[in-house]
Length: 134
Length: 412
Picture 1: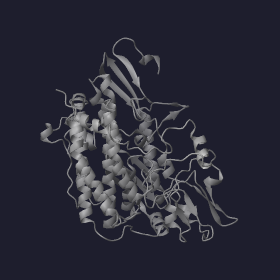
Picture 2: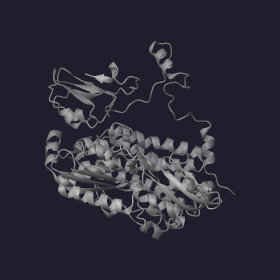
Picture 3: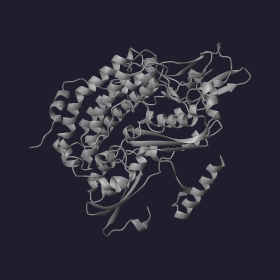
Picture 4: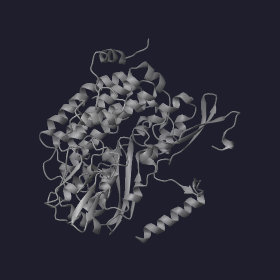
């Protein structure tokens, strides 16, 4: 007699809700780009993503005013995502290159760098305005 | 493939790979078959070389720690911990006890999610996809715990040279306890679902055999070696982090399951029992967690200047979910290390495929290949290209390369 201990669990599954969060929409839209642009215009609603944990490391935020241009962050960035601009003594961060380790946040003596909870960063142009933080 | 290897008479050749639906990661297999039976097998790794060591030798240790997170998607802590331990030994940095405990907790959480992931993959290879989905659903709890403690799901970035970057706060302790009790409640069910199932037993018992002697001769490590009865575990044999204070013993298949056979079924048993062991270890850590600092040096510029002055070489050893992982680092007073060599755990286990696969049917190949939990992308450290095509190295070439390297290393 074959033993199939999975059977009761499988039958129970029939009456349970799926564990997967259907993000961004319950069913895959024919074009995700079109769907997202219609969401931006307020025509369609997005199924919200799973909330991010506390102290999540998302897109980097830079406070230009408090920065002193010490360029210590350049020394620890593993991805060489930070560029120093000698003319203004400020930095420029390329988000497409950033690996979200937040090591620059730790070393910054003025606390000018922060990680935001923003994580939907996909973009077709790596030099788009949203992909460069100055 | 050249014409010599495609013979029509027996034994005939069946190539699988380098990229194939039955393989999770790129590796090239060449089987000599007689009917359905594998007569002999050869394999060639080296298809996913990414040059991480090259990148590392142009960066300082604080940068490399985050690079090591990316060697493997599953063993995020393992590689960074191993590298950090090597650098700490060179620079004689003493890690605060609290940091050691936090490292241990995360290390074990990672082992839990890795073993459940493997269990799901094994079920999938057997054609048992409902079990794959169920095991990956319960894996989410450990991923959520890791995410809560470190900030991210996969690339944790929690290990720093000389400690950890994030403390476990009092509010997080009940969340860990809750996660542990969730898994405690699941253990029996998981054991029943995996070990009492006739299908799994039929497909895995006495398949992919690796004898105790072969496991020792081929230097197999981790769950692969333990399933063959070799009682070895870096956590027990060479304690690091907080393991010296804790009660850790190598898990070998117990007598109630008939003792170690060294087959695929035993590898499932070992991993399931290690899941229980990991829960126990985390509980011990939570009970004995000391208070205090979590970093040897909070100021990163100061840490960098200490590391720059460091001279010497060291090996960082860590028991990864797949076996022992080793990082060799040599520092010579520059920002970047002079040498950084990674030995991922799968590297030592790959050779055990050859005795395992001999005499098996072609249909058993996917589960046997998956049974050692191979991680090719972590393992591939070398790709040899000559005149635009991959070339074989003769013994003389290797000797020459080896001598050159000794010379290069002795200069620094």
